[in-house]
Each structure stands twice: as C-alpha cells, then as structure tokens.
View 1 (spheres, helix red, strand yellow):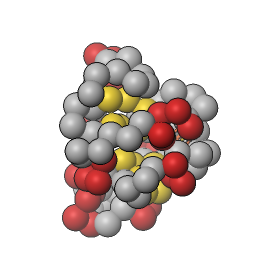
View 2 (cartoon, protein in one colour; view 1 turned 60 degrees about the horizontal axis):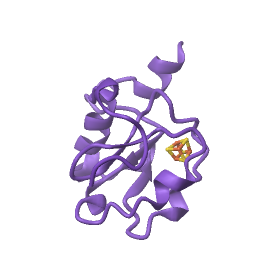
View 3 (spheres, helix red, strand yellow; view 1 turned 135 degrees about the vertical axis):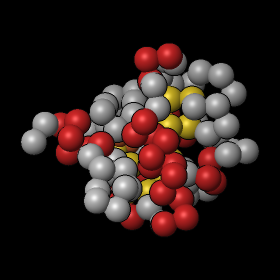
Length: 104
Ligand code: SF4
C-alpha cells in the first residue's frame, strides 16, 4: 500500500483517514504556532482555518501541543462531528496555495 493510500485512504463508512487534522477551534483563532512547529511545512492556510496536507505530513505530532485551542487531533481520534475537517483536508487542492503563514 502506497503512502497516499495509507494516509488518505477512505474507510468503508466514508471517513477520510489522515495523520493529523486541524478542526473547528482554529476558526477565528488561526494562531499559527502549529505552522512554526511543523518541520516539513505541510500546514496550509485554507481560508478560515489551517489545513494539514496529509500527503506531506510525516506524523511527527510536533504541532499537536502547540495549538492553544486544541484544534488538532490525530486522524484516528477526530470526533464524529468534526470528521468533515478530515475529509476537507484529504480532498483539498493544495497546489493552489503555498504552505505556511499565508493569508489571514
Ligand atoms: Fe507537521 Fe508533524 Fe503536525 Fe504533520 S504531525 S502537520 S508533519 S508538525
């Protein structure tokens, strides 16, 4: 199984499988501490919140403790009501934006 399939696979119940996911609490905050902590620059400004590109994330967890609003979850621990953030991160077209600090 390839890297992409492992990290962005789709389970039978239709839930995207990603390494780490930024969720709702980022909206209105966009603190950027996670962006500075990421060693591979795989966190992108997705508009109202940041997104982790699951194809680039190396699963290091460095971003997790940096978020002051606890918006980041390991992919397999995302609450059901926040699963759409995992789907959005998995399906997002990252080719249109640069990683990192970007727009606010
Ligand atoms: Fe970046 Fe590591 Fe967080 Fe993935 S887990 S987004 S590589 S800091």
